[in-house]
Length: 271
Ligand code: UTP
Image (tube, rainbow, N blue to C red; front, side):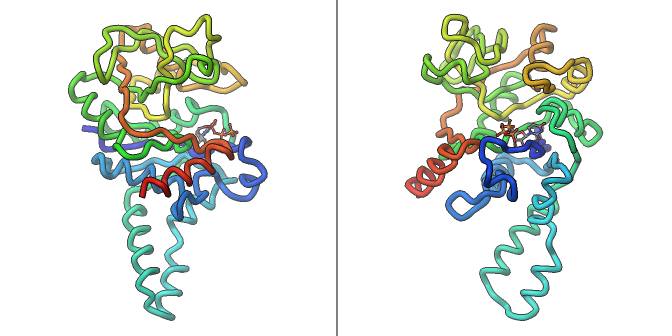
């Protein structure tokens, strides 16, 4: 059973500067609710019981958002505002599920995931990149179902326009079924000519604990960072089974300003 989710939150968010110079992008509100809460709600609905947040000293406001009891208590003591009470209860619910680990230098998603090693209790765990929102249908739930069916690791994927493949991690595939396929290889940002498909990786993964050993062996890759995809690649080469879950929800990219603005519009429209 997948009960734990890792959420890397220690990046610099340079694509959303200057906003991210004072505010983590993961707390920026989308239709009145922080980006990160959409991710938590998706996971909780899929049966996750524990979250491991990777933050940095520069992003302590994420911790404060969830652990600000004195602030709420003082306000609620002064006046019993029903809305504040409801929000505080929601925060308390999240609070019980969250642990923090620190990555003070953003050395990449692989390095961030490795920091969580000692907290992971089962053979598999979920990892979500909070920039990638998927609305309408619960992607984590679909992935957990596929994991149960295949007993393998899972990566969320969607078809992207062929002319944009060089912006994505692209999957080389085999044994394609209607909603999933086996992954033969992962290619980071290939040219249109070299792309083995137009199935792109979206930030949801079910990973085995074996990944930690592979991450430890990695040397910095593209941009001098330790990438989770490089560790996945080595596991696939060692015959570990990875499947692409062609999710049915709608993908929203919240990592850029234009994507963030569009996400607000889409979620508002969808209500
Ligand atoms: P991104 O590369 O999209 O985020 O990583 P970033 O680095 O913050 O943003 P840009 O590219 O500079 O604009 C996806 C997620 O992984 C986290 C980020 O916080 C983000 O939520 N991350 C990234 C880490 O936790 N550690 C890292 O070293 C890198």
